[in-house]
Length: 269
Image (cartoon, rainbow, N blue to C red; front, side, top):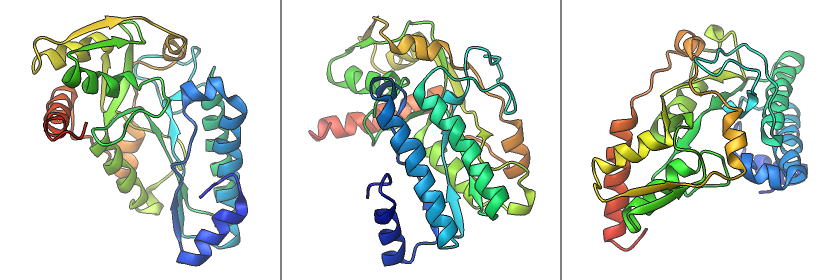
């Protein structure tokens, strides 16, 4: 499925009688800086196609993910509120701000039930990094288990909001199943789970792999990270759909290492 081609979206919706779409297709922040036109095409033109199909076929509900990339250096970096200045400095962030506004427009103009979350950095034991600025927080586990060493592309004291994939999935489902009458917001929910620096994550990994060593060689992604918040205020999500994460840095690290070590021992890492 190529969401930049509207006819392919229409074909799938008709073939499988789809009434709900989770639009997870995206070009992420780091790749978006290298290929900005592709980033715009997938993230905005693709979203436009999804929303047009939702309108034409009267679909039940649409999920449109956003990101902490909507924020910029002018935004308060600590306990960043949901309603604040949005002046991102990456093409990815620009597309996510536009996506939020486009979703709100289709909700108000056509009464389409569109919902969205501003994801923090997502850490997964099942999915390899996909070109984002928070990828180090996934790569570091693979390298710790395979090679006992990792070179991080961010400074050791760079703090960013993160979330473990099970909580990410839970948040997405919880929002999509929430009572619409209780939602005053739609496409721009802040959610939070944990915030940590690259060094703190390395220290946490060393509790399980004492010989692990981490070096720091910042690249172009450092400037992106420096424009993002360090922590997120998610009071609105807690109030409107009772959001609550299950993992912190300790429980996430333990689970990641257990799962990846098992795969490594089976020769599947």
